[in-house]
Image (tube, rainbow, N blue to C red):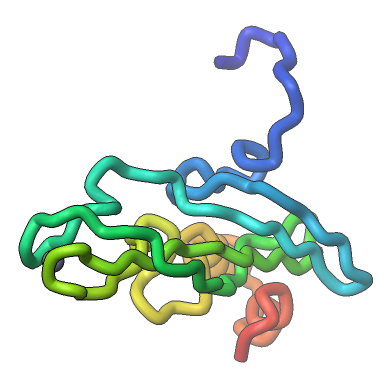
Length: 137
Ligand SMILES: [Zn+2]
């Protein structure tokens, strides 16, 4: 990869969101933070019911907000559009799997958790400084 050539600028890889199974589809620059709108990279079994195996239909989309590792100390929020499906067989409802991006119910992306640990352990940042940079308590 490090052959000195440049490729087209790409926020998804710049923010290493490809590692989290996400693709950036929009950006919003606010005074205090940057919000990146993301969607989940589709996987072939997303649309199939884990209970009965029937195919689901897209019902709606819900959003999940995560703090991501800051970009030059600037707050970075991911707003993920997650598809919800309803099974055409048993009517079960489920949503796209986002566990690659964050632990269930977490408010921090996996990259933000790693960033916080590196900050605390090797940069000797305070917990308060790390929390401020991620805008979490
Ligand atoms: Zn089903």
